[in-house]
Length: 394
Image 1 (spheres, rainbow, N blue to C red):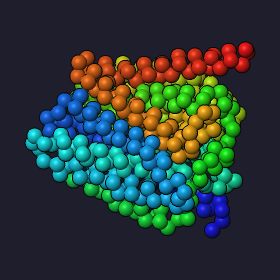
Image 2 (image 1 turned 90 degrees about the vertical axis):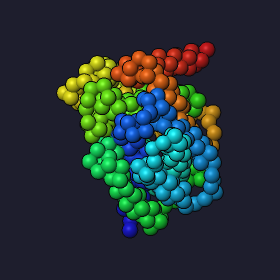
Image 3 (image 1 turned 60 degrees about the vertical axis):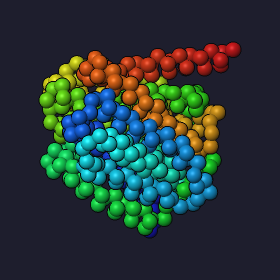
Image 4 (image 1 turned 30 degrees about the vertical axis):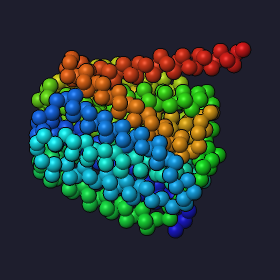
């Protein structure tokens, strides 16, 4: 097996694992309306479950990023995949007074499984031969698979539950077990602390923002994406009468657009200033996102979601690449845990507030928190760039 062939196979398995675990966590928004009806929960309480899953899966990544620092072979992704399959058993929880506690325990276990996959998975991507696959392209493809996985989750989960009931989720266990086997068969390695930063590409604009500032911008972008992908299926089902499958498809199109946009820009970032590209993308995408939210009751507005996602959500994977070399940051494992887990964790907490806001003003109106978050990206990032410019002029 040539080094190019080995590198591509390693990246293929890692991206498949990332897709699978994020897809498992993404199934919950797809069948949330049925879950709310079965257990007589409000949208706010349903959002609590979404938030707990996001919070546990992302904040625990901060701890998972510090585990097995000296390890040379991956182990946490296999464990994470097996724990992530707990979502497939959600239909076995009986109705009654203790149902909410059991649902809470289940989504927390799911979150732990998701958390264990990401930092070590990224370390494995960092260890792939950089002469065979560009680190920027490899990272973007890995992150793209997560976008696509979480985006496909609502469609897959909603469709399985709609046509086969909660027992249909058991089908997802099969590919998860196969991936655990494939990881064990490949010669995957883990990058050591410092190796990722040393081998990471120096991108245009990579030294403009500090790690903390990159973290802030990434958190705001992820908040805007989380609101759409977490609550849009429920909005379309409850406020406009669309099916679970259609709601899942809608959330998938937004996430798939974000992933496609990220992959496209990954081939261009060596030539252009990354931060400025993100600002231009969000500026161009905001009108399409607002346009869609105003016309969400019409199925013909669906293509706007993909276009909006491709523009406003494309910047996050590039921020992950920048975070590897941004000044004033922690070790590689902690950086990956923070930029991937911490940003989504904070976004999940903010989603909780949006859920209870939806109980008061309606879920359709609450979705406009998403474009407000992207607008905040523009304002804050421009302010940060201006601040750094002033420092250079002094």
